[in-house]
Length: 186
Image 1 (cartoon, one colour):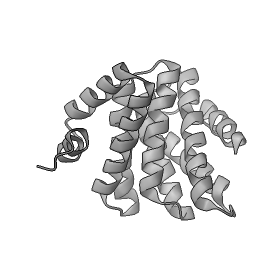
Image 2 (image 1 turned 180 degrees about the horizontal axis):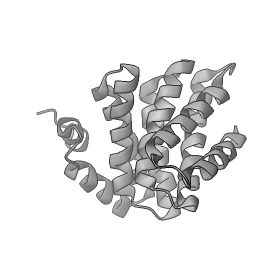
Image 3 (image 1 turned 120 degrees about the vertical axis):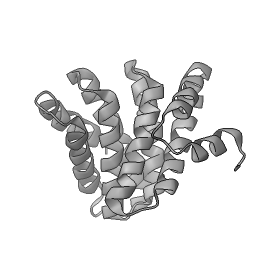
Image 4 (image 1 turned 60 degrees about the horizontal axis):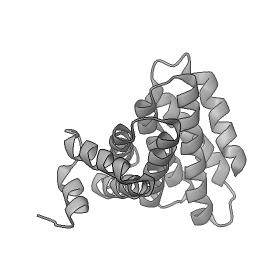
C-alpha cells in the first residue's frame, strides 16, 4: 500500500496547479485511490484504515508541495476517503476518524495550521455524510475524535490550537465538540 501515497501525490500534483475547485479534485482523487486500493483486499477493515492514512498523507504532501489550499484540500480528502470507504465496505466512521487524525499529523509535519486542518477535516466528514446518506453526527464525532487524538499526540500546543479552532468554528456542531472536549452531554 505504500504506492498509494505516491499515486495520490502524483495524481494531485498534476491536477492541483490548474484546479479551480481544490475540494472536488482532492475528493475525486481520494475516492478513486481508496476504491482502487481496497477492491479485492482480503481484510478490508485493516487494509482500509491503512489506505485512508496513505491517501490523506499523500494528498497533504501534494497540496503542500504544489501550493494548493491545504484546508480546502483536507475537506476534499476526507469527503473522498469516506465516500470511497463506503463503496468498498469499510466502516465510514472509522474512515472519518482515521482521515481526520492523519490530516492533522500530516499538516503538522509540513508546517501547516493544525487548527484549521481539524476544522476542515470535520467539515469534510459532515459533507461526506450528506454525499453518502450517513448520519452527520456520527461522522462528525469520529472526525473530532481523530483530530483531538492527533492533536494530543503532536503536543500540548497542537492540542490547544485544535481545541480552540474546533470550538470557534461557526459551521461545526458545537454540542458534539463540547461533549467530546468536556465529557459532558448537556
